[in-house]
Length: 447
Image 1 (cartoon, one colour):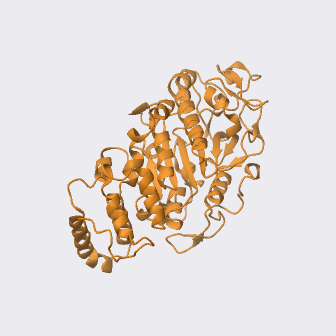
Image 2: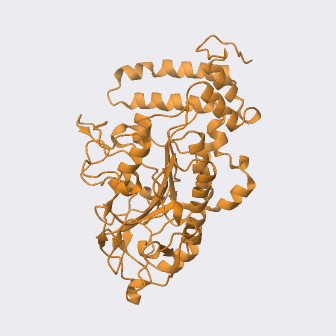
Image 3: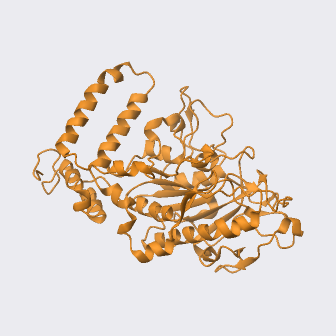
């Protein structure tokens, strides 16, 4: 039986935070997501927050076939696609991105991304802004893990960092971003797949859940005393988060797309929830889920999309299996953020780990090209309706305004309210480390 006058941590209206969480535990039969958000706000645990949605275009998309078409190049470099005008005069992108072309005033394509140490497939640089070569002790953490460590969750009912990244045949393709030196306590929460059912309390009453929490604390007590690795403190954080999630329906409601307006769901579309080869799904509902998660209080959401490693049939693969779905999902997300008044608070970035070769190979594909790639920014209160950087006539080398991954990370950390050059990190050897190398500054073009 609920006690709405518990004396523990009373609020101004006499209701305790504990009881707010107990009310939230009614979940499917009780409060809706907006009501839970209001209750959490009354408990003083949340406020309007900044967030980032990072979309990893698995396997590296062809930059010269998306935002940097070279119509004056020879045929063996130019390719098959045609440019189309956008709603920003003078800016053109690929004909197979019509929705993005129609909203270019809300977007910022970057045509001169660089920083990948080689042409190996890995999501690492997309989620850390750093090279995986010569890492400090413990390894560089992803942005989501940094935010988890230094900002935490906006409420006990929502994790700060969620990864919509299912397992993949090539493990880096399925990574949501690793915690590195920050430890497992700051790993991504991964709600997709069979584990989703574990977010529901089910038939266990709350008093029994409290008993289990107490028993778990007693059983683990002796382990903590002997632990020298920090593993137990990480497990403590996991346990605290797990109990918070089980005693509120806030997260499960955010993941429940059936609560969304059918017209909005139709605009996003479904895509394909199955993996594409050894890559990620082309799941358009993940774009909608990302919006709902940041709306519910999550600070960083990572989303892995498709498999863009088109060594063969680059043009048919891009045209038929990837570009139309990315166009639909990304455009719907950006429109939705603007419709909900979230565009200034939520920054979105989509990119791959490197670019593709200028010359089309004998299999009508494009191979790996670490020299230059592309990215796409939106939201964040950034100055949109512009393209950043230019390449030579073959899209092979950077001509003007090279943009390192770390510069974008510096911009995103600044957006989140974190100093990118503060020595917040301490690696496992005890050495201080900055979030971003000091030579890389936030992009002035975005201000």
